[in-house]
Length: 154
Image 1 (tube, rainbow, N blue to C red):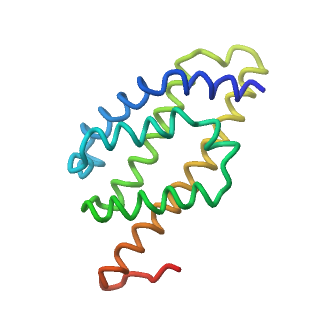
Image 2 (image 1 turned 180 degrees about the vertical axis):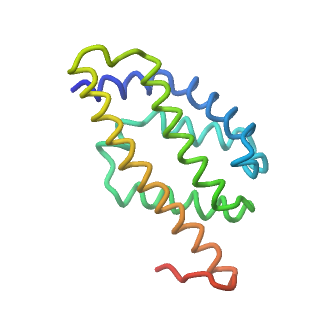
Image 3 (image 1 turned 60 degrees about the vertical axis):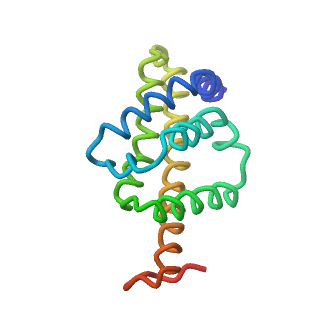
Protein backbone atom coordinates (compact mmCIF):
# COMPACT_ATOMS: atom_id res chain seq x y z
CA UNK A 1 0.00 0.00 0.00
CA UNK A 2 1.47 3.30 -1.13
CA UNK A 3 -0.14 5.24 1.71
CA UNK A 4 1.77 3.09 4.20
CA UNK A 5 5.05 3.84 2.41
CA UNK A 6 4.26 7.57 2.68
CA UNK A 7 3.47 7.18 6.38
CA UNK A 8 6.81 5.46 6.93
CA UNK A 9 8.48 8.39 5.18
CA UNK A 10 6.74 10.77 7.60
CA UNK A 11 7.80 8.65 10.57
CA UNK A 12 11.40 8.74 9.35
CA UNK A 13 11.28 12.54 9.20
CA UNK A 14 9.29 13.00 12.41
CA UNK A 15 11.86 15.17 14.18
CA UNK A 16 12.16 17.52 11.21
CA UNK A 17 8.36 17.73 10.95
CA UNK A 18 7.97 18.37 14.69
CA UNK A 19 10.55 21.16 14.60
CA UNK A 20 8.82 22.79 11.61
CA UNK A 21 5.45 22.54 13.36
CA UNK A 22 6.87 24.07 16.54
CA UNK A 23 8.13 27.07 14.57
CA UNK A 24 4.73 27.46 12.93
CA UNK A 25 2.93 27.32 16.27
CA UNK A 26 5.09 29.82 18.11
CA UNK A 27 5.19 32.29 15.21
CA UNK A 28 1.52 32.19 14.26
CA UNK A 29 -0.88 34.75 15.74
CA UNK A 30 -3.66 32.15 15.33
CA UNK A 31 -2.17 30.12 18.13
CA UNK A 32 -0.12 32.61 20.12
CA UNK A 33 -1.31 30.98 23.36
CA UNK A 34 0.98 28.07 22.54
CA UNK A 35 3.88 30.30 23.58
CA UNK A 36 2.71 29.58 27.16
CA UNK A 37 3.60 25.90 26.73
CA UNK A 38 7.17 24.69 27.26
CA UNK A 39 8.79 24.05 23.85
CA UNK A 40 9.80 20.54 24.89
CA UNK A 41 6.12 19.68 25.50
CA UNK A 42 5.08 20.96 22.08
CA UNK A 43 7.87 19.21 20.21
CA UNK A 44 7.42 15.92 22.09
CA UNK A 45 3.65 15.89 21.43
CA UNK A 46 4.19 16.55 17.72
CA UNK A 47 6.98 13.97 17.53
CA UNK A 48 4.75 11.42 19.24
CA UNK A 49 2.11 11.85 16.54
CA UNK A 50 4.54 11.93 13.62
CA UNK A 51 6.80 9.07 14.84
CA UNK A 52 3.90 6.71 15.39
CA UNK A 53 1.63 7.84 12.59
CA UNK A 54 0.93 4.36 11.20
CA UNK A 55 -0.12 3.29 14.68
CA UNK A 56 -2.39 6.33 15.08
CA UNK A 57 -3.98 6.01 11.63
CA UNK A 58 -4.44 2.25 11.39
CA UNK A 59 -3.72 0.28 14.53
CA UNK A 60 -5.00 2.22 17.52
CA UNK A 61 -8.63 1.87 18.50
CA UNK A 62 -10.74 5.01 18.44
CA UNK A 63 -10.94 4.86 22.25
CA UNK A 64 -7.14 5.38 22.51
CA UNK A 65 -7.30 8.37 20.17
CA UNK A 66 -10.22 9.78 22.15
CA UNK A 67 -8.43 9.35 25.48
CA UNK A 68 -5.23 10.95 24.16
CA UNK A 69 -6.91 14.02 22.73
CA UNK A 70 -9.32 14.50 25.64
CA UNK A 71 -6.21 14.66 27.80
CA UNK A 72 -4.60 17.19 25.47
CA UNK A 73 -7.74 19.36 25.40
CA UNK A 74 -7.96 19.26 29.20
CA UNK A 75 -4.27 20.08 29.64
CA UNK A 76 -4.35 22.96 27.17
CA UNK A 77 -7.42 24.43 28.89
CA UNK A 78 -5.56 24.12 32.19
CA UNK A 79 -2.63 25.99 30.63
CA UNK A 80 -4.90 28.85 29.55
CA UNK A 81 -4.80 28.13 25.82
CA UNK A 82 -7.85 29.41 23.92
CA UNK A 83 -9.86 26.67 22.27
CA UNK A 84 -9.56 28.33 18.86
CA UNK A 85 -5.78 28.11 19.23
CA UNK A 86 -6.02 24.39 19.99
CA UNK A 87 -8.09 23.80 16.87
CA UNK A 88 -5.68 25.84 14.76
CA UNK A 89 -2.70 23.89 16.16
CA UNK A 90 -4.32 20.53 15.35
CA UNK A 91 -5.09 21.75 11.83
CA UNK A 92 -1.53 23.06 11.47
CA UNK A 93 -0.27 19.60 12.43
CA UNK A 94 -2.29 18.11 9.56
CA UNK A 95 -1.30 20.87 7.11
CA UNK A 96 2.34 20.28 7.99
CA UNK A 97 1.96 16.62 6.98
CA UNK A 98 0.19 17.48 3.74
CA UNK A 99 2.90 19.98 2.77
CA UNK A 100 5.55 17.37 3.47
CA UNK A 101 3.84 14.72 1.33
CA UNK A 102 3.19 17.22 -1.47
CA UNK A 103 6.82 18.36 -1.29
CA UNK A 104 8.05 14.82 -1.72
CA UNK A 105 6.73 14.84 -5.28
CA UNK A 106 5.03 11.49 -4.81
CA UNK A 107 2.10 12.22 -7.09
CA UNK A 108 3.52 11.64 -10.54
CA UNK A 109 1.58 8.53 -11.55
CA UNK A 110 -2.12 7.76 -11.04
CA UNK A 111 -1.21 5.13 -8.43
CA UNK A 112 0.86 7.67 -6.50
CA UNK A 113 -1.94 10.25 -6.70
CA UNK A 114 -4.37 7.64 -5.40
CA UNK A 115 -1.99 6.74 -2.55
CA UNK A 116 -1.65 10.38 -1.53
CA UNK A 117 -5.42 10.87 -1.66
CA UNK A 118 -5.93 7.74 0.42
CA UNK A 119 -3.47 9.07 2.99
CA UNK A 120 -5.08 12.52 3.04
CA UNK A 121 -8.42 10.83 3.74
CA UNK A 122 -6.88 9.00 6.71
CA UNK A 123 -5.40 12.30 7.92
CA UNK A 124 -8.81 13.98 7.73
CA UNK A 125 -10.49 11.25 9.73
CA UNK A 126 -7.78 11.20 12.39
CA UNK A 127 -7.49 14.96 12.82
CA UNK A 128 -11.27 15.51 12.77
CA UNK A 129 -11.48 13.02 15.63
CA UNK A 130 -8.60 14.78 17.39
CA UNK A 131 -10.42 18.12 17.26
CA UNK A 132 -13.65 16.64 18.56
CA UNK A 133 -11.96 14.89 21.49
CA UNK A 134 -9.79 17.89 22.33
CA UNK A 135 -13.05 19.86 22.57
CA UNK A 136 -14.37 17.22 24.96
CA UNK A 137 -11.30 17.58 27.17
CA UNK A 138 -11.55 21.36 27.07
CA UNK A 139 -15.21 21.18 28.10
CA UNK A 140 -14.37 18.81 30.94
CA UNK A 141 -11.90 21.31 32.31
CA UNK A 142 -14.41 24.14 32.01
CA UNK A 143 -17.08 22.03 33.73
CA UNK A 144 -14.67 21.11 36.53
CA UNK A 145 -14.14 24.83 37.13
CA UNK A 146 -17.87 25.42 37.15
CA UNK A 147 -17.49 27.89 34.28
CA UNK A 148 -20.77 29.53 33.24
CA UNK A 149 -22.24 27.81 30.22
CA UNK A 150 -19.82 24.89 30.51
CA UNK A 151 -21.35 21.66 29.30
CA UNK A 152 -21.03 18.62 31.52
CA UNK A 153 -19.28 15.83 29.63
CA UNK A 154 -19.55 12.24 30.79
